[in-house]
Amino acid sequence: PGVPGYATRIALAQDAVGNLIDGYDLLGNLNVKVVDFAGTAAETPDDAWLDAADAKSYIAGLSANGGTHYQNAISDTINGFEQPEGATQTLVYFITDGNENSGSNVAALQGPWESFVDANVDEVFAIGVGGGVNLSGGIEVVAYPGEPTLISDADLEATLLGTVESEISGTIKVTGEGGTDIAFGADGGYIQSIEVNGVARPYSPGDAAIQSFTTALGAE
Image 1 (tube, rainbow, N blue to C red):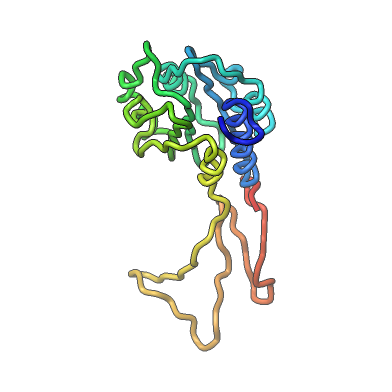
Image 2: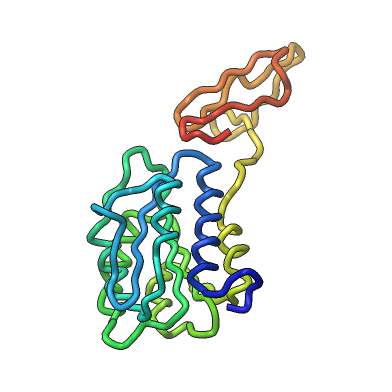
């Protein structure tokens, strides 16, 4: 692949996806399902959702067998899907180093795929790696409702990690009835609590100005 330290593209992808999994695992509870495809497609054993360690182990055992049968991959994704309990966000990563091969017709699944994404998925990342993928080779169907991303081998890891939102930030604005802002009077005032993942986090005057806590999903 022309990337130092990697003799094959599959080895590069295994490390890049492994680091992606680690990035999400740091944010909280993570469930991973892998649909690997070449001339055919296969899923994680028993269509099971895996934790980070088991998912990385499964991916490390994959080998490149030739072929890029998009239709089988998308069909297996749709038919084998069951939302894991407690999931708050569902993301799809479709990574390929080739256009859809002969005998595959992912366009035949465009309607079912779009319906599936609309009902179950928050975002799809369709990524073509290397020079063997173009925007009209089938990947544009998978990328719905967005557009595919075509990158070089050297950019794979950075591209994947760039999709991980590592922190939540923003401004707390106190608004009263009718949309008018509330101003605290001469005696002062404070926000007594905020709610994260359904859990109230109280605050009292005199508490530390900067506080950290572990969320219900395991993030801090």
